[in-house]
Amino acid sequence: MFSAPGYVTADGELLRRAIEKVLRNAIQHTQEGTRVQLFGGGGQHEAVIAVRDWEPGVPDQALAGIFQPFYRIDAAQGRSSGGVGLGLSIAQRAVAVHRGTIFAENCAPGLRVTIRIPRD
Ligand SMILES: Nc1ncnc2c1ncn2[C@@H]1O[C@H](COP(=O)(O)OP(=O)(O)OP(=O)(O)O)[C@@H](O)[C@H]1O
Ligand SMILES: [Mg+2]
Image (cartoon, rainbow, N blue to C red; front, side, top):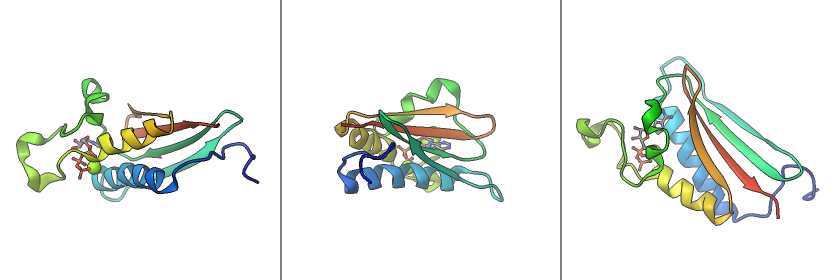
């Protein structure tokens, strides 16, 4: 079963946290009345997990920056509007431990964050 496409050998707790942080962001940011979509799949060489929300996305020039520690789009509005800006940097480190990648793209509307973990 574990040799089936999409399965990886991983630190389950680390990966769980990474996915949770991405999911929390999506739920927090998506427009009221919309949905959050979680995709899981992959193939012979990697597992793929993607989370998409609907609105507002992030400015294109911030798509890489949101993975930096303490980077927040709405930082000027203070802590009341969200967290401290660590979630995605923690997720990125957890993914990197597995030699994987994480990136964000705008879907117009919404943001999709994709995690790719190579198989052994
Ligand atoms: N799904 C999303 N839609 C829109 N903006 C997002 C989304 N996910 C992250 N962001 C932007 O990226 C920033 C960084 O996200 P990150 O998860 O690292 O920190 P945070 O959510 O602000 O705080 P923390 O996760 O530490 O509680 C957020 O402040 C927000 O501006
Ligand atoms: Mg967060």
